[in-house]
Image (tube, rainbow, N blue to C red):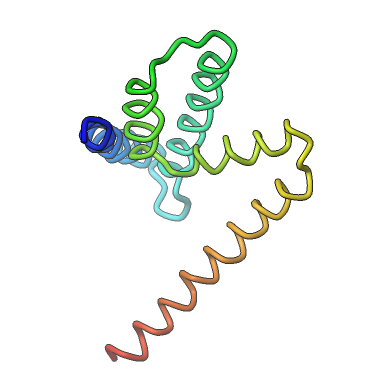
Length: 127
């Protein structure tokens, strides 16, 4: 139950940060045509998880509880794209190039397809 609380607390922090950072970047860009805020959050999250996971693996710097709070909670709440990026790089680094490519293709095709399909379904059901 302790790790569940840490993940939830971190998720609250990460989601709040995502809302603030994304909104600020979007406002600063003065763009309504391109989601600069989301791109910035994904880049920051990917950089953070890469840096911190390297420290965790090579230096053993984080306890299991701290990893739960930061990696799953804060970064997971900030952007799940960072987890996707880290898992893909881990596959690639471990020589699982085909699985890394499948992971990228599956996320892009299946997730975009799920959004497209569900939007069509919602349109049909509630029009």
